[in-house]
Length: 232
Length: 178
Image 1 (cartoon, rainbow over the protein chains, first blue to last red):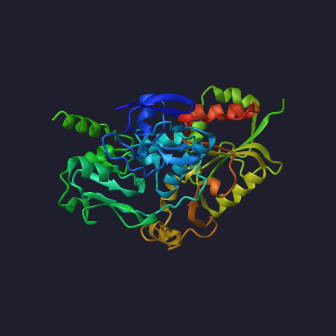
Image 2 (cartoon, rainbow over the protein chains, first blue to last red):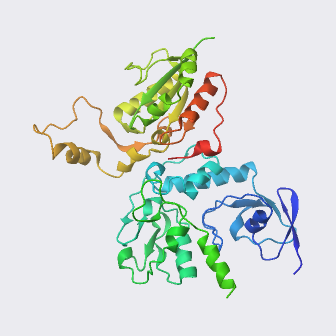
Image 3 (cartoon, rainbow over the protein chains, first blue to last red):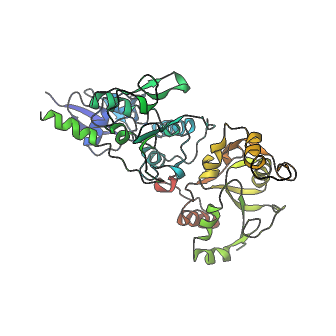
């Protein structure tokens, strides 16, 4: 296949057809922050953290395939401002109390606040009241800390093949559920593999027994499993 | 050079941010020569200075009527207001009660188990607000120092810059919550 030329932030790069903007940027050492993207899972572009400017249009870099001659701007003032707003909204709609979180110090959302320069959240906090489900013997889900990235849903469906996790409701009421909204401990399809724990970017899905700031995850296990499969 | 007038205020928080402020070690000695510390839990001056200050650091979330009043006073009488720590910046732990009824909480916490005379702490104490708020939802805030508590080095960096008449540069790891 013929390589294409893509211009990112004013410099030209070779790109293979079918690659996303995020992949081409990563290959060339250009950092674009992301949250819902995870190597090995289908990209869905739902969190909007990786938005970039393609000729005046804002598109998610993880879910946009490059085309020949494409011109991408990853960090204009406008893009940075939108990205920061996106992260502020993620913080505002949950109860992300970093100080008392098992993932404190190992959280992708916490790191994003630093990366995008989030000094404060400029919209009113929603302070929702969400349900914690600790019915599973080994894991728990703290929906206050969920950013609805859907990594758990995709890892469970695409990698484990169980599809225990999914979304319920609409709009602000959206939440992750297990099976048909039963307690996780009673979800018949859950194999207990723990992939959802490893891919969850925050302290929303965690191992029981982890104390404050003790939880460290390995989201890269998914890419490893996919890589292993490709070798039969 | 005139000393920079500084006040510190403590709302709904654990005093950990003030502890971190004291934890800047020998920088305190340098700072002592440069600032005039006015109203502060550290000085036990109870009234916010009428003639105002240059910089006010506010620890804690806005959780009761007194906090709200003092936040507005501090804003009106300070050139620069700093939200000191996660409770002031985000609401943090004190805001975890949001969504619960404050009167019911007082009944449950103070009324039922221990009080012998049945008196609830309404008289002479500020009423709890229905919703605990981050400082910036109540007054304009100039700088935000993240962390629970903010690292001593971060506080020193910000305060020293301001005392020097400069803008504190808060970037990257300076913005880490928790």
